[in-house]
Image 1: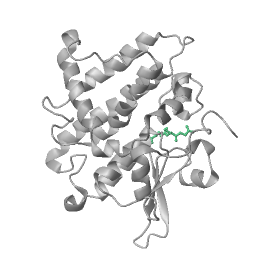
Image 2 (image 1 turned 90 degrees about the vertical axis):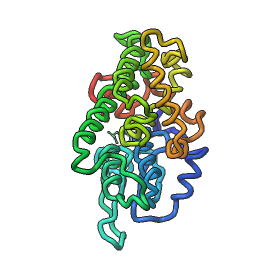
Image 3 (image 1 turned 45 degrees about the vertical axis):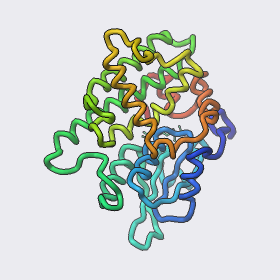
Amino acid sequence: MGSVDTSLYKHTSGRAAKFAEAHSGPHPLILYGGWFCPFVQRSWITLHEKRIPHQYFEINPYHKDPDFLELNPRGLVPTLAVPVDAKGTKQKPLYESQVICEYLDEVFDDSATNGPELLPRSKEDAYLRAKCRIWIDHISTRIIPAFYRFLQHTDEKPYSLDEARQEFLGHIKTFTKELDPQGPFFLGERFSMVDVMLAPWLCRMFLFDVYKGGVGVPEEGKGGEDEEVWQRWRKWAAAVGERESVLDTWSDREQYVDAYKRYAEDKTQSQVGKATRAGRGLP
Ligand SMILES: N[C@@H](CCC(=O)N[C@@H](CS)C(=O)NCC(=O)O)C(=O)O
């Protein structure tokens, strides 16, 4: 059945199209993704960062194809098909972006091939790992839901656009105060899982300029008593926004403008959109 969601443009474009094309050949490790999806981009960035051989398979998750539902009964992308054995002829599924990213980070752990770990792994790093998890939780349970409440604001909502904006900015500020003081990343010079978890929504923040009169992050020198916090945010945002893995998993901007109109008008029937509308936690 056709809907505002199933009518999405079908393909990646720009740098994401090149990255997808480079990973279009058959491989026993398959990422089922949608170019528009920020949760997919988390997994994609992880595959890129760790130089993991894989096949990227573009699907539209709103179609709920039976074969796809068999892999992931939740009917969501990203879904990862993991080879059962060394022959790689049979796969078992994994889903939930954070679970997928942590799995990939753990399995592909040869530093010579895969580079450094994204989530600190050693026993000595237990505290740091736990701290990363707190801020990943803050991203997933506070920043991201507030992002959609802001983007899906319409005049019918019981809250004002500015209240939605301030809620979103408040969660960003709380996060920013926890960043390593020098940076540029959450853990300092080292890019980590915390950065991966938020990067896709950073990429999509320009949508507030297009649809909601601006995101509201003050310009350089105009942050008042919070100027130092905003300065630190701008440094994080610039470094993450320029990261190769982030750029290589990003399609042309116009595609996102088009795809997110259904959120800006609060017409999407996606699970994320419906949960936001109903005031429930995200799927
Ligand atoms: N909690 C899931 C959320 C994934 C998600 O919501 N994906 C969206 C696309 S961005 C989807 O597949 N939506 C299909 C639907 O809403 O029916 C994750 O972290 O992977």
